[in-house]
Length: 350
Image (tube, helix red, strand yellow):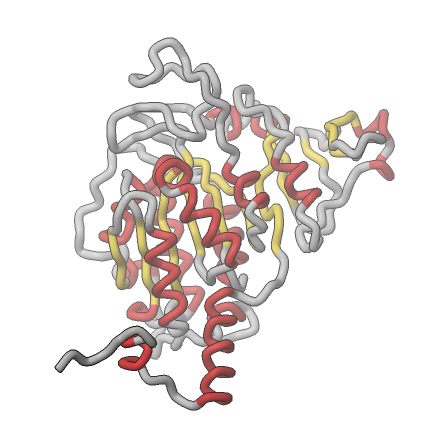
């Protein structure tokens, strides 16, 4: 299509200019008042016109959960699928329809519990999907049980004495699965989320975007320290490719690599500016990105990175499949579907 969005080069353009209104369906949006999903929906609807794609060539596929109502509210094609299986369904679509821009909408429970296996393999294969993972650290649709991202000690309806589980870190999981694009943003930061969506859309292959999202009914204030103007700058580091990893209200904190290879947060004045690491989102080895993902304290949220952790180039799975099929056709000619179905063990009984 354009150099701005190379991953969408096979997707037809829209013949008319579009606005956010064009992507709003006629369905009543039914989330709890104050839910973070509203801001994510508004942001996505406002961003999509940038792509310049025909709405009939955009697809949103979701699993099960509050976030999975998303396709109903998008004036595009979509599918509200089954629990945890949205990446599997989306994979089939991506392989067979290169003319589509495919977005997966999922939550921390849907993606990381019953859907964990499907998620990691879609990332490992580098299927050309944009996966938006809404993380509110709770099961909202089923009324407040702890989820795979709930912090240890979390008191919920299903853990009245506190959760004993160690929480999943979605960014760490994605990096461990060798995802080629991994990022994190927040429901309340419209500018930052748009930047992340733009980068994800430009990426060929699997792009996982974790979105910290508030559930004001069953887990209100889950990310509040990262939103409060009095605390956010001292807790949250914004990753920018090529820039020193510094944060704090006065940028007094920075990230260094210790002699044992681990990362640590230090006082810049004491360590020296020359010791502060520069973020490299394009590093082929995901080691630095993974180490950054482990800095945050899951309870206090101290040292929480947001931004693009990793963005590297690798051919997408669906493109490789199509190229392989083309090579086979060049060597052998068109295939015979009926012969394939019959196989070598089929015979006629007379």
